[in-house]
Length: 312
Ligand SMILES: NC(=O)c1ccc[n+]([C@@H]2O[C@H](COP(=O)([O-])OP(=O)(O)OC[C@H]3O[C@@H](n4cnc5c(N)ncnc54)[C@H](OP(=O)(O)O)[C@@H]3O)[C@@H](O)[C@H]2O)c1
Image 1: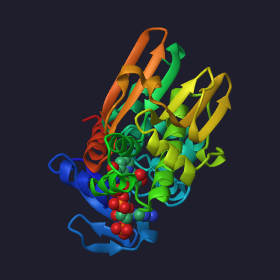
Image 2 (image 1 turned 90 degrees about the vertical axis):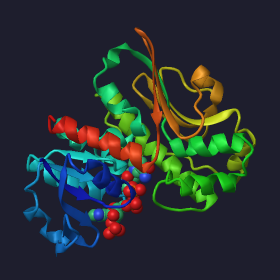
Image 3 (image 1 turned 180 degrees about the vertical axis):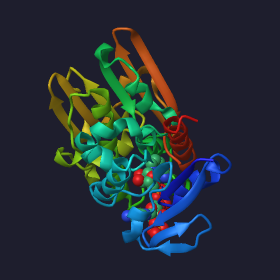
Image 4 (image 1 turned 120 degrees about the vertical axis):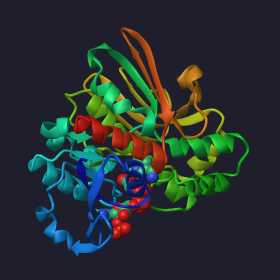
């Protein structure tokens, strides 16, 4: 059986352990407090990590508490030793994509964007010259909260349900802070998706000026919850309207994210936590849909990456 080191044993990490049983041996576990054996005994401190690379794969499931530097260090550490890495942490890919480019064949990062939709491997295997525009819903949590409010739920109650369902990113739980934490998550995912779509882009999330949602904008979004959704748009035309998020111009392309009119999604509006990718191209329209947040779709997508990289 192939052997792994698992970095981060929280919601997602524990689910990987549970779902991977029988097909993958988690030989070492890494927490903030040190390195542990598979049975949970502490082996040593984190500074001894260089001695623990006798594994087939490294799996990263830590939060983004910095600009991704910590996860980037873990990625480089294993990749330079020839150990492939699967990660669901977004900061490293969103801020250090140019540095990771030479190693991307050995990195599984499907779970960083789109949950269980597998939109990243789809884009990696698709001829991007055919693409005319990309429209996506990539934050299942905001989509879930928006759908609940549109169905008549109070904003605070909708956020509480999202937290209880395990959909939210690690971090703040207050209404406006949580929404903006999810908006930050949207920014990271947009940059990863855009860099994957166009190999010429070298975007870094930390360089993107983004607009947090203000209290009054949140009220506007809540009272228009039936007509607004948080979306990503990559297109050669500038989106007509947007609340919060960001707008970038890169070559011929406008890359934007924020709350935009729901009718842009046409018949592909999703309710709840689902994520969607709509690609319009010279060969027609393609739509990918799937569960967008939650420990189980995330862990399943990561395990699929593991098996893909290990050739299983
Ligand atoms: N939950 C979801 O639905 C979902 C979906 C997609 C992606 N993700 C991503 O998955 C990642 C993990 O999320 P989660 O919900 O599992 O978080 P979590 O429950 O807060 O767990 C985080 C784990 O990471 C460990 N950790 C933190 N910093 C570390 C470091 N520098 N070195 C080693 N271990 C470290 C923590 O260790 P201690 O126990 O010692 O504190 C904890 O075990 C995040 O990047 C998140 O964005 C989550």
